[in-house]
Image (cartoon, rainbow, N blue to C red; front, side, top):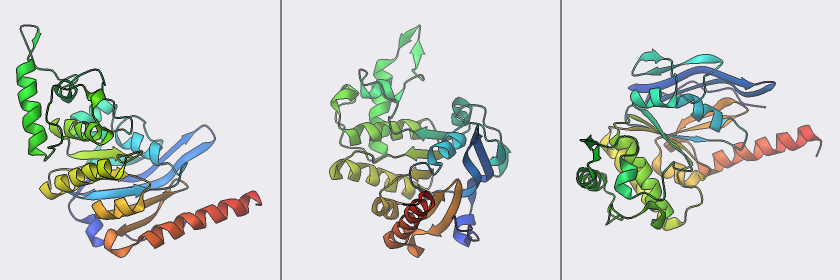
Length: 265
């Protein structure tokens, strides 16, 4: 059974820029989210973890405007908003980088950076301008592993492609960034590139992030606070300094044991 959500800490309530209250979502008879509330402080990195089927994907799709909740509210900078679509959310400064990145492998780095936002003059793409701005923006974010912004994305490593997707969202003036499994299927070197990028963004204080991941050690390294989602509810909300890999693992192990017990295993 899910444990009751503890009272929010003072840290978790400081300078809220993005929050969700009492979100619920069902698909027919399947309850994906029952009563989810979370808050994201200005410049904060919030780690969201949970087992498969816990409701993470549904929650993220609601927060980025892909799904509409059956109940509950979303607020941005203190004002309640009704997200009509992913494009609407993006126009408000809420963007998402999916695990599959949504990059076009056959296009160059700079074309992907400006995908659907290409500057045009006299019906001609301003390639020189896009190349220059893409290089400047990557450098401003400390992304130095991509030396040629004219190279096809297909020729880059997974970490480099993920960095481009994050940079594109930040360049489009995202203030709330949702990162859906940004380290999935990456080696240590590639994962380190993304962890460094998240830490660099956190240091600026300009972007607030929710990072969805399975690796507890990586989450604890880059996040300020942890939320655990179980059975459609947030069951833990703590600063990283007040939790540990052991506590998070115990929560998951307890859930497995309860599930086996319910199945009569």
